[in-house]
Length: 153
Image (cartoon, rainbow, N blue to C red):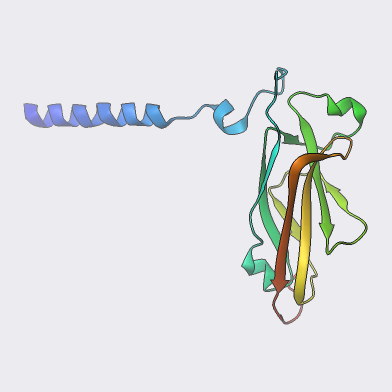
């Protein structure tokens, strides 16, 4: 009976140590607290996945994204440019049209419906509160919408 108890105690201790070693803090996952200014903030970064084929089959563009070193919030203007932690939003352009829209929702997926079959392009830019693009933070996604029946949106 003693060897069994010793074995169970060793397994429990090992599990506790392994769990603690891999635990991440809230700051590790969510980033810095908005209550403390960040000195020498690293440059913001935009990461965008390719569009999901499940949507393209119906003429819908869904592309998940995330940002680093920036919070996407609906705050605009010169005063917000100096905010720390840094704030900004996305500009989205479709098929090189001369207009774009701002997305400050941070819902992690760009959602555009109604694409006809054929080749298309979506440009997603990470911008500051004054609508200036952060250097190197533009992602262009070229894709083709297959022939589909009707509109699922």
